[in-house]
Image (cartoon, rainbow, N blue to C red; front, side, top):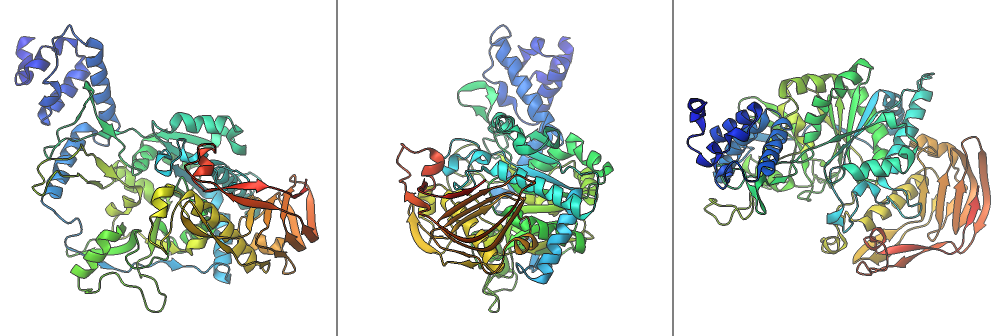
Length: 602
């Protein structure tokens, strides 16, 4: 036995503990020494001390090894390379020239848009939705999971309920359009993390999956990755526990490796599925953009379709860019705003990122991190990469010598970097829709939102809720309803437009055609009004609303509403976000709804 232990001779502390290790653990220990991780064992005591903690250490190493494509050795090797590049100040875009990629720019409500919406609804029965939801709402000033936050407080529906109801409405409308007797159930995959997994299950269970069959929903949990303490990619130990490696999240790019290893992709392919739609946890407008974007993917044959919004030059949102390398390689990829402008300046555009005088926007549209991938080519690509996504590292150095870090760092990856490894033959495009229709993420707390420069989006719970009312009001206005102009108000230090509080369930109107069929131009809604439509067959025919109207109709009921509804309605009362007498989800908005008087139709 002693002769076999020569590999550990450089590490006496480990040598003393070899008798505790199983053959698999010995292999992991050999790998760690080979990869320069001897320091992990320097403070280990003799074999009769902390036995359970040492076993737990190797359990953790085994998990870190199995949950990373290529194993922990690959992670350490990738880290060494990326840390060396970072120290040398190497530009990841060296040798690349940017140009404007090709894609579709849509105008809400025109004939082309409506055609694409219908094409998208028809395709939806071949789709799978993947929701990346590994984050807590702490950055928002909310302790729960972000999926449990209300999208808006008029109905109080949370993001997860809104997403599931939207998918169910798509499922039904798609089967109807395709005259499909067999209702094709649309799968929903939710990527969780240690932080969100149990609470996501609890949210689903306690609400009967919001009407979806539990077999339609799959949860995939992402693991964390090891932290790195220095430029040699030495793994960082937990400052409070010498037998534990410090870990941090790897980023939402993990979703690709998780899907690949789950075996779900092949099952879906066999079942005739064609599209995988990736989306994030707090954009309440997203499903207004999905039908038309899916229509674009289907009619254009895009292998990759990034949803995008018009972007002002230098606006703090990544731009979708075509990059062509001197060696002929090309990719269509999200380039972060702080990299796009210098890249353009360095490649013959002295003014950098500027607005097009005709449109008033940058020719590089704003990436909103919602992707539609064609399933067949996606599987082929993942077979080559095992789901590994191009990573980056972002160490915070103590000084300009870049020799030491302020705190440990880790490798990260983003799901929108998937196209980086695609062959040039791939059809990669984008679909641009108006921001008011497609994008109102909730990610900033009140203090941060109040500091946003005037004219830039707040991306807070306040602006996210107001965006829902604005979009619904503008859609009704486009369908011929007279909608009063909004008033300006300030909540939590953010000046917003307050539109009539209009909200409807997805089964009432999924696409613009549905809205046009259910309202007419003799309707009007005043600014102080609230309209809640919860039901399938509800027609507004010459309705004049000045107050609050709340309609709840079962699926079989046909409801036609006309005439005048006049009452005191529901008002918005200001709430200070520091006032602990209100729940967090109200405080982070800066208002609560005072339900004074309403007319209910049940």
